[in-house]
Every structure is written in C-alpha cells, then in structure tokens.
Amino acid sequence: MLTINIICVGTLKEKYFIDAAGEYIKRLSSFCKLTISEVDEERLPKNHSTAIISNVMEQEGQRILQKTGNGSFVVPLCIEGKQIDSEEFAKTINNVMVQGKSRIDFIIGGSCGLSPAVKAKADYKLSLSKMTLPHQLARVVLLEQIYRAFQILGNGKYHK
Image (cartoon, rainbow, N blue to C red):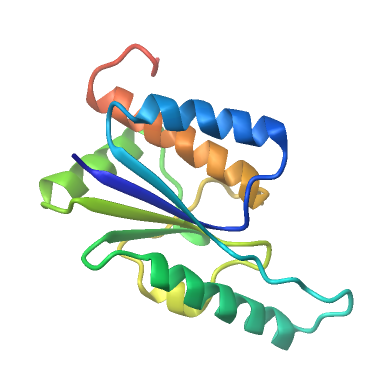
C-alpha cells in the first residue's frame, strides 16, 4: 500500500479546517497509509527583513527535510510548481506507484514559503493555484485532491 506523508509547517487551528481534514483522512484510509508530519512554524518579528525571511525559510526547511523519507518521491507545493487538473494529478500518483515508489512526501511550507534546499529535493513541483492560499487551507485542498485522485484511479463516483 502506498504511503503518503504530508509534511507541513504549523498546525491546523480552526475547527472547520480540522473537521475537513479529518473527513478526508478518514476517507483516505481505504486507499493509502496517510501520515501528517507537522513541523514548528518560526515566528516573524513585526519589522522583518528579507534576511530574516530567508533565515525563517532555512530553519523550517531543515525541519522539513528531516521528515522526508529515504527514497520518497518528494513533491513540494510551491509557486514555481506545475498546475495540473485532477486527472493529471491522479496519473502522477499512479506513475509514482508504477515506478515502484512506496512513499510520496507532499510538502506544504509556512507563510514565508519553502527554502531553496527543500525545492532542490523535489522530484516534482506542484502548484495548487496561481492564487496564494493559506497553508492550512492548502492542506485541506491537497487532502481532497489526493482522495479525488484515488477515486479517479479506482473509477469511483466521487469525481464527475
């Protein structure tokens, strides 16, 4: 069974995000082994410079990279990533499995984004949208799309 690990900066705080994520986590249990690895989010001072932002991304990036699996297919969500539709996302997951990979690590950065070191580890860069999404919402959207991908691959009725 494929293991999907979502590595994300910060925790879900609002009940509606927690409930939505919980629903997709429950649904995905039939299709994959899902883990969510949260890393601490760095605090930004009110008056921050680009150097401070770079330092924050670096510190968060080090914690993220410690959570990636050896031999995992690594997919950071970033603005430079490819925007694809749900069917292509399902094909991408299927191709990873066909290649013999047993784990996919999806990475969601914090409010400052992802460090260059995290992006350099990418096997595939993904963008959910041209719009900027809060990382808590991005987690729910990603979970939904992973569930949708498994429904597409299994010819389920969820995707129309």
